[in-house]
Image 1 (tube, rainbow, N blue to C red):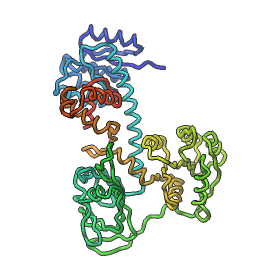
Image 2 (cartoon, helix red, strand yellow):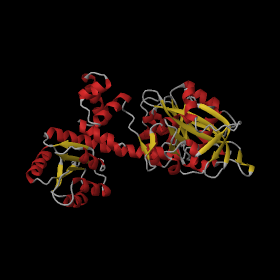
Image 3 (tube, rainbow, N blue to C red):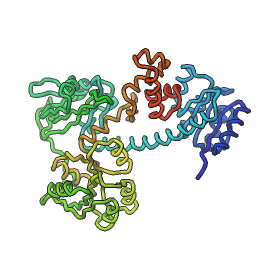
Image 4 (cartoon, rainbow, N blue to C red):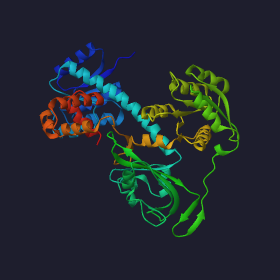
Length: 484
């Protein structure tokens, strides 16, 4: 196994040699040492290290921050800064390069070693998260529903491609603006609901349905008859702080200026009357019998094989190669990665459809990253189950509305209109304390500000450090700033 390689950028020769010697004792490889920003850029390109240990203040025309910018533009290398400077101006410049660690001089080698380990771990986790994000965004773009999300102020935070097409406005045009500036949602009394959807969902406390409403684009005046479901998004403390809107076109396409013309939904090849072979994997007789009853005759779906344990799944695929494999996720020792890997390597036509009994975001994200195509819940209606099997058999992505809402809750859009996953693992109180730390409050100051004991502050800080994978207060500042 290759050693982790670290490029040291330090203009004090004695300090650089000392760090190099100690890192080698800890088992790291040091392919090069650079004493200037220009030299660091060149050596990063030629040695391709796993991590960059960078002093911010370097002699010459290019300091550590500028060098880090140039290196990051070419290579995805995690950076840990070494510096004796911790002023706000320095932090503001350094945060642009999105460092994975920040160690103040003078430092103990144990502290530096810890910062390196955390940086490597966080970088690997971030790479996996980015891949999951790509899968998640791809799913939302191919989910088969027009989806818009609004925040606690009623401002648009996300639109998928179908929503853009439906409304006739691009996401970057609508992002950060009130929903009412993009569309009007008129009921039979011509009352416009778009400005008060959040209020209605809050008052109801759960999902709200709007049947046969006229959705009119503010861009071109087009009017479309739609059904809308508005689902609440909740924060960690259960408070509704946004809404997910899912639009379904009705069979009429209404033009506000030209009158009424017919609108026909496209017919997928999956709707053609050809038999689909289905493999059912469940350890529950109740689930098995329920699926058989739902499918029944006349739906052109044939249950080709059944299994009740993980060890039976791959032999089932090998022998029967069903079009769709419906897996009930509580199967003991279920290893989705192993199943999906076998399907890909054997080039089997089988597509996997998961039946979830709890809306675990991590399971959904992992499954998406593996290439699994469909997700259902145990509350899915008969007609939706049939349609999901047909969609997935044709390679389409299918997601139950509740699952889609769950994963949408972990998505936001940056000011540039790019999707990004949010840090949602901090509680409301922990976020509050992290913000105060970033503003320069001491433990004592936080204690007075929030009317809690200093011991309680310390306990919260310990949890924040653990969740964010950091080791000191300064890194909280960078973590918070990099998320803005």
